[in-house]
Length: 312
Image 1 (tube, one colour):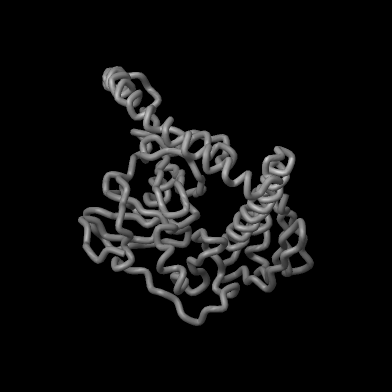
Image 2: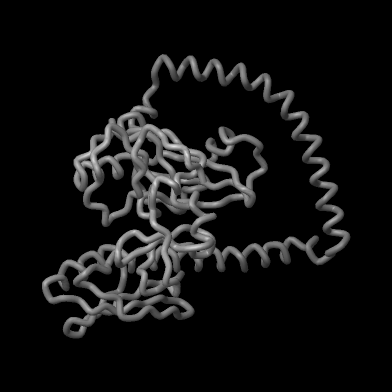
């Protein structure tokens, strides 16, 4: 973590944020409520190469909406792909804190705080905290955590690498053809010549990798069968899909909680996950509406509301 101050006041952006101290510039640590993340192993060397693949890598995780901006970051376990919607962030900051998009400087992602979260969850307010679930930063109710201690969010938690916030107007205009785009195309063409030389080195690396694969097959002959490999891939794909569904449902459940909607229990089954809430009568209609919109099954008896999500 970097202790160096930037020009912007550092704030943790989450749905419960209501006000912040005035500043000429703000740097944002986005909570998982404002971005989607996926880790992928790719045979590319540079970030700009990985970013070209971002849209296809994230395709199965994003709603059918436009306006996403992609950030890629390399770590010890592969490439991290982040997708966020500038328009969503701009509208939220304007509504909650009257902050104009021109005041947004750098952005960071909560997953960059992994080294802190591995030791302690980070408190958001008296009801929620930022914690690690399956290696990813997730907002969960404090009642679900066993920890009695929480790290306090401050500028000291600023991650090393920040990313320049790209306003929604720039994202929307990025699809339009312009003179600068034509110039960029010419430059990319010139760069293509340079990549031919680099391609030769990749070919050599590919041959070396093939040799490693052959060595692996000699040690584990059963892996030579495509049926066996497909079976292993299918097994772990199902596990990854189920774990992602668990994280998504927990995030939805946490958003339903409030001072008037108290989480009573959380139950995980083979194909579903359910939670029970004690809901104030004045909040019952609103909470049921939010849960139904998120395609969760809702049942209530009096002021007790049961919400269930599938894990398919």
